[in-house]
Image (cartoon, rainbow, N blue to C red):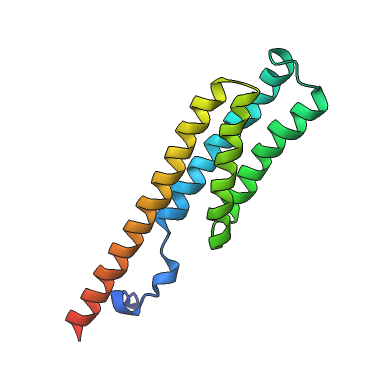
Length: 136
């Protein structure tokens, strides 16, 4: 019988394989926001009397951008683009007034996910550094 291979010590495990809490939270916000923005399309067409092609372009276009950005969050520029999407979502309130509120809610969620994720990653890196220093 062969014995199972020993588990690698934590200092041998590369930290870049860990899941990023910032990326996970931000992707969740963008995914939920994509649903909300997609659902503004029929509202723009039926209630706000926006031209169908314009409503489809704006509503579904922003939803697709959210989904694409959720997949691109490994790059730092994607987080900045996420803030641009938040501004666009709030600005959609000029067409569909409830989007002022929903856009502000998602902007707050996006900011919280970004800032809290950064804090968690900093604290995780500091804890690993302390652990490695303690191990010698």
